[in-house]
Length: 182
Image 1 (tube, rainbow, N blue to C red):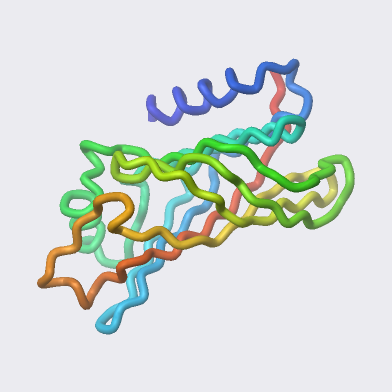
Image 2 (image 1 turned 120 degrees about the vertical axis):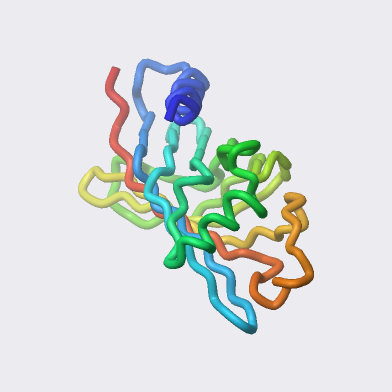
């Protein structure tokens, strides 16, 4: 939990304004989905944190790897110990900029791209991730769906379970933001 708080504070320090246009989410929902020939695997977390500065487009996102919950406890154990090594690499993060025109004062759905650095399993990759920012009744939300290749982040899948886990994992993100108040 200390790491999440640190990342949020670091994210807020990036946004060096008097609070205008800064939005915070403390309970973003992230889903991992692996479609494989033998078995589909899904995990969910509602512990993602994010800071978005609508004036500059800066975006910081973090999720504790061990917060993902699987239907089967053994899958969760293997995910944390064998694949993600969550003791060694406790968080997955994204830090970048949102491009596209977004008017947070006007209701609408805005297609955007977030370009920056995605760090998973201790490996950082430059990425451009498509998404949508929606403004409805003054509430700002973000959603995105993208693929992450295990090999890009040095996540090793043993040959014995190769047919159980996909080489690319679908990530779905949904975050509702509150305006930051000092």
